[in-house]
Length: 431
Image (tube, rainbow, N blue to C red; front, side, top):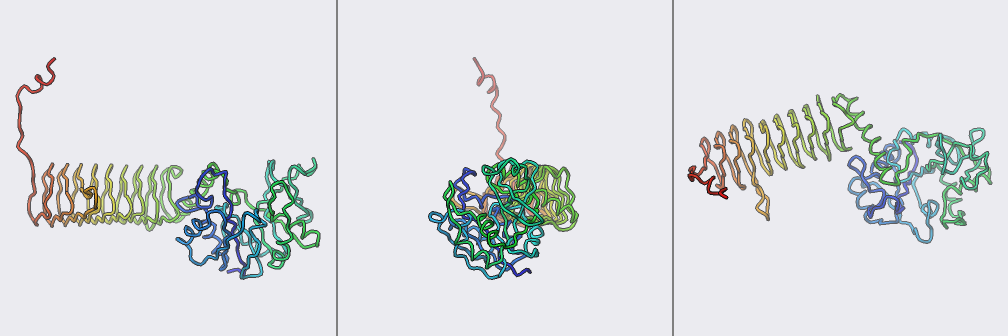
């Protein structure tokens, strides 16, 4: 691991997101965008520092759900606004400092490593754009940064420059601490800009090296449109990784897989599937248009058009179309179609017919359904929880069970006698 400290700037309001949620907490592939940055940063540094201001408690609480080895700095964004103000009075562990933005969720550890190997007082990330309109230009000569100039201040010749500042910096620690308090806010926005260190350092003839970076990895997310664009890139990475490891995907562009999902063994994922949370899919076939949320699927097939809600666990099980499972464990079970299985434990050899419902909620509390081995549940049956169905039981189609237990080896049947009312049709529709 490199001897470098990383500072992530996450103090901004992100007004262009048009949301009350802090910008860095908007999700990409199931995790807050700042999560992805921290995840990659921890691969190259043991000293991760995050600068907070706007909704600081909300941001820090969310980050601590995933990472505990983080140092937070709370900054005064009123008296010292801007990227330069955010870095005042920050003390870090190592003599080299990498400064990242909390709205760049697509960066990777491999693209950050070169910042730490280039020998310079400052390393500046630079994008080479075909159309740099709207960006400040970076003048480079003999592989050194000469200056940064805003577009409104640029000459016609400078406007032809296609190098722009990508917003990531590596500093020697003494350089950052020497210049950070010298930055002034003499600009239209009255903000302290980190880029002003470049001009101050050039005056003192420090070495400032450019590092050309990939536009896709260093894109900032400032709007919901940017968020959608970043999501596409992140999804392509996630699916490419799993296909490389042997997962078969049919029409992968139609599949959504979140960051925490894992695949093991031989797996097939058909089109239009959504797999979220910390789901684990092992040696299983997920058929078209299924939704799987934070569930375990092992040696099973699911779908098409099935829904596994959180805390479902399937082993050696067949789940067919229009079946919904919630917080249930099924081992060696068949549920072919049109069923709801909630808060249940179902054992091997059991067959659940079409239209079967576990009635697990009475309006106040949820209750458990226990179903033993080799149980046959006929179509359109309702199992009113709490209930236990012992092994080797048959339940006749159309049965509603309100008892607490069905004994082993029995047939359960509840039906009313059919009643015919003669000529009722004609009386009812009589004009």
